Length: 364
Image 1 (cartoon, one colour):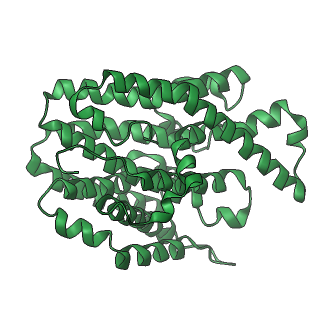
Image 2 (cartoon, rainbow, N blue to C red):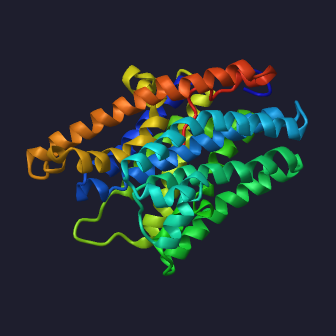
Image 3 (spheres, rainbow, N blue to C red):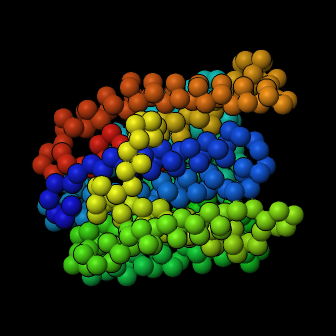
């Protein structure tokens, strides 16, 4: 994967499947103990590491092959084809149904400023999960000029600066700032930059050393254990803010980065991520993420039976219904929105873009 054709790595779909399951655990269980582990935060960080790796790899492969203007047109057009169909339909349907405050907030979301809205209002809106999509789009706008236009000698210092800056920014929360600072791009650049580091290693002379060591099992599994330990609740005690906002996100990103490095270097690694159901879940993970947050809101409003499932075993039935509807919407989105757009992308792609490692698989 160094300047030639970029292969698709099946385990990345499985890793996306893991990530979206963690997000669903956060949003659908309504269980204080489950949520005390912050599974949704971990899932989002996995998505960001993957995105940083794949986007940086694409841009590094493109910067020397075409004029910047042509690279920009192709890159942003492909991103729009991948992301906008499902997202636009989700916004339109939510507005039509009168849920998630979409009729008044749609400008925030379509402008990819959902995270700014959450920060300014200090409140999770009915489409609060869109903050991650906003971070992604803001990342694209930042990362394109850095990777494509900046001198190559600047890339490593810039990426390393992002790695250091994000934990420091999240440290403002520890110092008394609002926790909603976490939804802004500066709080998430370490996960995105960590993926970029792996991509830079794959495209540079250190690839045979640093990134292979980082993906070794002796590094990966201790990091996974550390991530689980940092995420664990402290029974009867409030978890220290420095652990929740600085250490835990960093360790989760490191574990995700190690997994990415492992399978990018050796497709035989982490074979359990090739499980058919996990890969299938990963393939529809973008639509699942986009639509799932609206499912409880829509069912509670229009299906009173589901809204009344609030006691004991009824909660399990409610969870199953939410999951089934969300999966059905994600499958429909994949078949009728995302795949047709991606086929159009493939028809229009020229040269190296045909080897894009994210054709049909890029996520939030």
